[in-house]
Image (cartoon, rainbow, N blue to C red; front, top):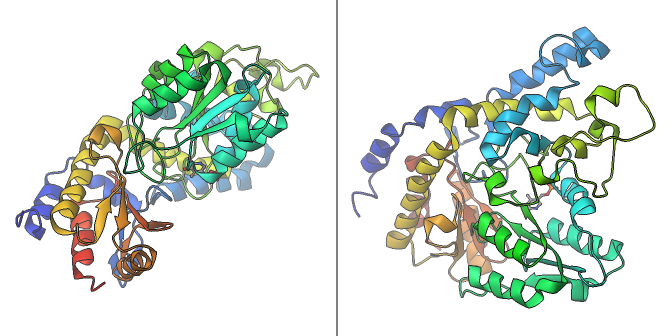
Length: 422
Ligand SMILES: *Cc1c(COP(=O)(O)O)cnc(C)c1O
């Protein structure tokens, strides 16, 4: 244990890390002249140094080619979203035609629900987790109301059944068995934002489908964090953002998955001209014929400046590979967990499952003693250049991201907590 707590140990781990060079690809914010130990990749990922060149390429093209930039030269804007399609499909384990980068997460959730939440009098209900990210709850509740149903009976919010605030798969199984005949949709997170618990998408999909429900996922905290097999999971749809683990910048253009089986669906959708079949899009005719696959849900020509940084980010994921990232992530988070268990348990309790299969990189840490002590520790850490993020009432989330965090960062966190006179 003394060894794990030594700088020599942390530095040796980092020196042996096959992904160590990737940290150099990012701008790491500085605090008092030194690089921060930045653990907020679950909230806003760091900027890849290549982002600027991709944005400048768009600005230069606009300056020099103006309208012709849509159809001429490198990185044309008309098919620009296609530049991110293949690497994005790789990151989420989908076929290229199943993914599209568009809009924002919550907007995509609404668009997906227009097509995939089709409540009837017999089957009006949605099953979601209690304590969901508020935007998801607002979206789902407003959809239930929009269809003339009553959220107090038709928005079913499952309470965590485990003492630590996490869910067992049996709890989901029971809820789906209980409400099955009334369920139109199961909408579940890939990784729960507050607890950091990761879920088995394939198993949840199987349970939901067996009950006759549509199954969709919010992968905001899963994409770029865990290797995913979205196609094989069988999920009907999924949505996510690109500013968290995907490092594509504040408010980056989001992502959306529609399973291949719905590629040519006759389900209703809200349509826009960018979803129109490419061969006829510019005939500007009155009849909407959707592009098969996820592209058919696009509304508008995309914000090219907003998409540009995602290209730089995806190049890094392509080079590193999700499996290698996960391997490093398991080590980093296990190191963090061990240091907390062995040295910091007077102050911090881990609220994330200890089973590595049930978590990504994030550990949610409940500060012993409650809110005021928690805030004091959080602010002390920030004053030492150790940046986590705060969740009311008493949780600090620490997410060591394998693309840019190090064992030395994790040790710095542990030493700072130890030095705290709280
Ligand atoms: C981050 C996050 C959001 C944010 O929604 P935006 O539409 O991107 O602002 C929504 N839901 C979940 C679960 C999130 O983690």
